[in-house]
Every structure is written in C-alpha cells, then in structure tokens.
Amino acid sequence: MAGQNLKGLPRVYAAFFNSLKGFKATWAHEEAFRQEALLCFVASPLGLWLGQTGVEKALLLGSLLLVLIVELLNTGIEVVVDRISFERHELSGRAKDIGSAAVLTSLLLAAVVWALVLLPHYI
Image (cartoon, rainbow, N blue to C red; front, side):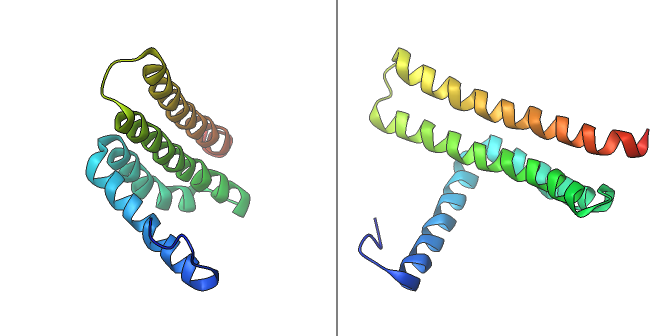
C-alpha cells in the first residue's frame, strides 16, 4: 500500500489517488455502482432545481450520495470476502447479504427523503 509512512500533504495526496483508484475499480467491476452513479448524475441537478431551500437541496443530494457511499462499502465487503475464499460459507454469504441490505436501506432512505421533501411542494 503506497504511502503508509507518509505524513502531512504527501499523505493526503497519496490517499486522494488511492481513492481515485477505488472509484475506478468499482466503476469497472460493479454494475450496481454504475447504475447508482447514473441515478445520482441524473437526479442531482433535479434535486438542486426542485429543492426550495438549502436544507432541502442538501437532503436531496445527500441522500443520493449516501447510496454511493454505502455501495462502495458493500463492494469493499464483497471484495474482501471473495479474496478470502470463493467457497460457499454461511458467514461469507451473511456478510454479503448484510452489505446488500445496507444498500437497499440507503435506497429506501433516498426515496423517503425525496418524497418527504418534494411531495408537500408539488402535490
């Protein structure tokens, strides 16, 4: 892992580029992440346009970004489980199912936030 002994700005610089590698790997290998990123790309301008206050806009965009964050964490769990073994194991399956449940929960949260913010204004 590059930059383990770095400090200060060089560490921040190395961490930034490691993060970009993580985004690139997730984009290349995870269809779900690409779909959710597309949703975020399309819905973010809509959220900025439809939200009437700064707080509403932050809630609409934040809920979308949370989906991406949870998907990244879920992908990390899946990669680690697969790295350990491709054999079927109850705990491996449980770990992957729990990560998937977290993604579903974040998607439901985003839907609820969008509904609670937008419905009072537009219905």
